[in-house]
Image (tube, rainbow, N blue to C red; front, side):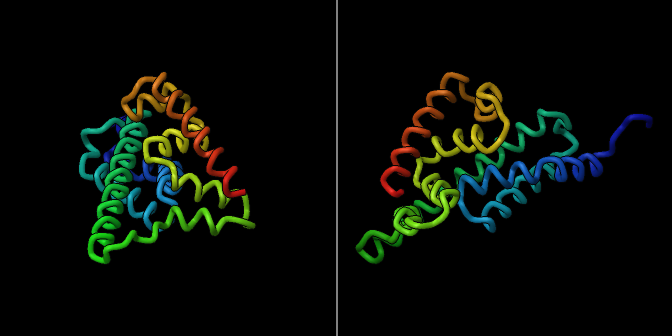
Length: 172
């Protein structure tokens, strides 16, 4: 039994080690603390259910990031479907939080302006930019997490930065 870590202890350690990072990533993607917390909790539930089969090293970190990414993408798709359903019911465009946010940020902190502009970016651009700018991950690590090439990550980050700069220029 020397050196073996029981799965329950490994889960608690993973939760303590990775929750803050995962929360920051998801929060930057969705812009709402409650939603980010819920999605990260859901990822840890998935981990808990599979804790005996999953690695306990950096492989776990990448697995958790892929899970929160998928949960976030599903959340964004669901929001889009709900918005379109409202538009069909009321026969007019739903008020989009992102578009309204751009008008609200005039005169507010730059940090808030960046967060709101991030929410306007397409999800694929937003996720790579968040992983690059708000974490210490390299292009190679991001590619590994998202299952895309390092070159693709670089292109997406470049395009996301350009689009974010354009959005901020229009607003500020």
